[in-house]
Image (tube, rainbow, N blue to C red; front, side):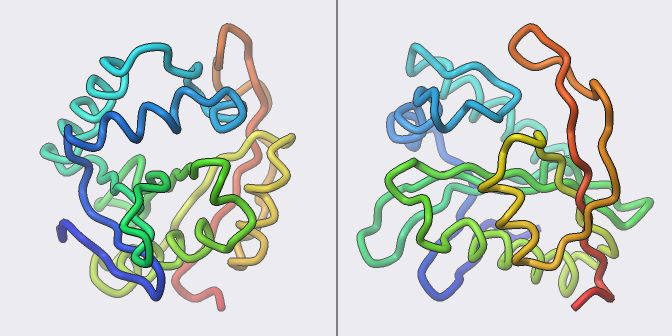
Length: 177
């Protein structure tokens, strides 16, 4: 698996512990984490622990997470990646988040497009899934722009911040345009 991807405006590279300070700022923002299955962080050590956890999944070839860097400014603006990699069934689930300062600029769509291209062309995957809380309208709009199909709602599918939440299941197939 590659360790970096480039898009027109973004550089995606594997997470590094040295990213923890900036990612902590993103992951500690309650607005950013509102629809994530984690509570906003209160200490930088939590970001370091998350990076270690995600990198361990990566080493086992079960997931891959990338730091999103804006090329023009060389600033870390978020992270994205394959939350799961299921090569036996040629599919993956993606996840992503951006610093609020970078919302509405097309960066999420661009990062996801890079993940899709690599997944379909290089990893040989057939299906990419995304699970989104129904109230997360920004993420839903992003997935719709990228031709993901809503397959349905998984009722009380996860426990997040102490309560059960519904998740909309979106997918995109290699053959979808």
